[in-house]
Image (cartoon, rainbow, N blue to C red):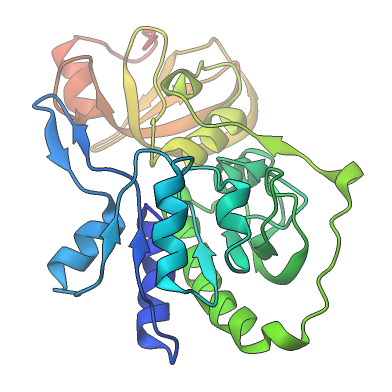
Length: 298
């Protein structure tokens, strides 16, 4: 049971293993983009592209008794869950051991956006937990953990990829050792939670360069980062994080980038996107707006 690319990498590993995958459950196809093109979830598209012949179920809700019956009829030994996008009701949890691959070191970052939260908190380590699911949100017993070291340059797309591969290996390891694993209770007092990311989370200002770049690293995947005036900052990196400046001042214009001041620190900005426009190099944008050294970007 899974939906995005994180789940697809785990799914692929299962298909290559000694275990037999009897069915795939994923979210319904959705209308995407301005043209509202009906698009299947990443994991379903993978099956279509690779001509994988497997029953694919896309129920609107798991609360329907018919869904539980369909799963029972499959007679699974295990139900593997990875970023599925729906809460599993007790009627499904009781069918077989449900193992969730959660992209954090539980009990940290229970919820919808653990990978982004690890970056936003500038954690030194993150990882993946295999967990025996129960009715609570990511609160079940721990079956296994895999750790990953990260730093202040780690980008969200690379972290997604690395954690997906960690999760895939941990899935097989957990299944191989399931009969001998002694599940570990989570310390619920140490739990933290992360919410589903919304578009407005990408709103940034130019007050602190380090904080801005941290948000950029976490949100580049989606929703991106943008200023109050709607200008999207598409490609940037930290220039320095200690100088005190006039917020938004253009400090330097080079061949393919510009140095933009934050109240504290500055950023090296390479690509932007104005509202309803295509992405473009910052130098071209400044030239078009007739902005020069000392002018203000924001």
